[in-house]
Image (cartoon, rainbow, N blue to C red; front, side, top):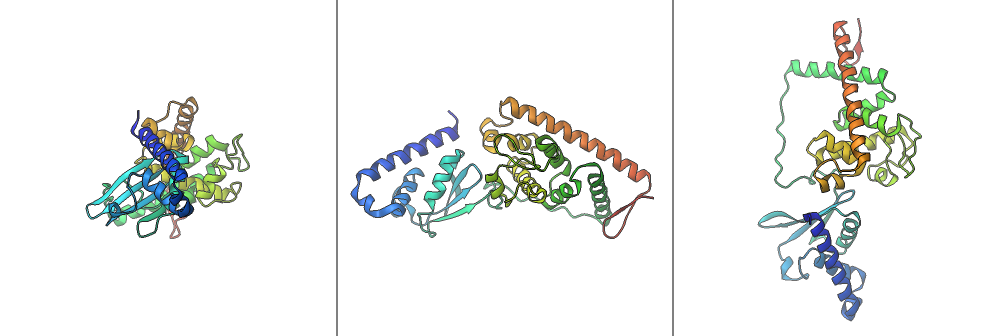
Length: 303
């Protein structure tokens, strides 16, 4: 049995036992919902009662879209003591954690929080660019912006949001092409909506309330791609698979899940992604050969 499944079963068992205890103890009924919830959380996380076992200990409860983890923080450092990938269990534990005082537990909706990283992750070194490097980056950005504006539906919007979240616009275009064929009013049988086919619940998490609005939809979708890239260390295929099947499934199977739909989806997005890059390279070669210049505002001018 996989560790995540054992953990989920263990948490579920502890919750069931704690509920049984609560039902048979008048004292716990007197405590009310918040007090009982606090004891339930303690039982579920194996941290014991709210006594000397919590002395000098603080817990950070981080909720993601469909997972949750609990970090124990004390004088010895920080340690992940629970990593739950069952959506229902994760949501339940996060709600229970609200019953505990802030002095013991901190809570985070950690979708894009900088603390949702492996505890041993080292910060990425910053690389200084030369003046020449900065100018080349500005020219390349202008070429990409002009290409997407003229060759891709909603290209201006795609490039804008891709730059905003530091995501390859070719990947965004490939996902949209596969998800909706660039139809902003597209809706799937399960209720996914808009250009990037986001579910309403996911859209709300990402700050989009009208998924038929291209600007809101693409902003949320690109933000989600960025999140998945960070979760999977920049692995392109795992990122694409997670966009289709959910990050929990990719983590559960250690890569692309064995679902025919997801495997086909990844192949099609990757093919579109490579084709878009080939088109961009051809456009770039043509522009450079034509002696293009970039003005102070970053606009491309052909000569």
